[in-house]
Length: 142
Image (cartoon, one colour):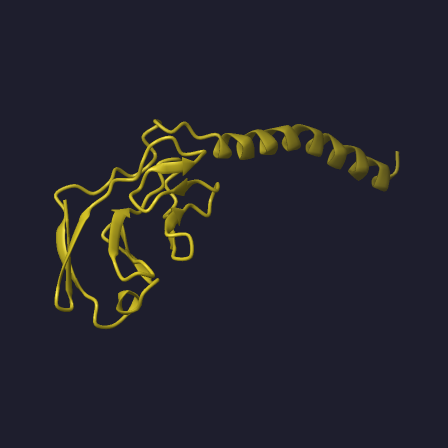
């Protein structure tokens, strides 16, 4: 047996052992159980204010994530606030102003502007929070 043949056989043998393990690990990562406790719980007892005179919330269609909550300003100028962590696998959702909804870029879950699931794989809604505007100060609260 030549050195080349030896390394070809050893390399192929290692690949035959490692490939199923790697594929199994990847599949397990995509099939998280919604209730396995790995998703951060939605914030509770929420009560904070934001200055909307500058930054992402100063113009319609903008959004930001703070304190575990996505705060968005719709194209119509209304304010929305929902828990940031997708209920499927915990990735932060993003606000889509053109469709006025929330989207998880990880596995494609979609939520309405009030946090209700409109497309899986998520099966649980995002928590929705109240907003109150007073001048340039936006209050977000439970």
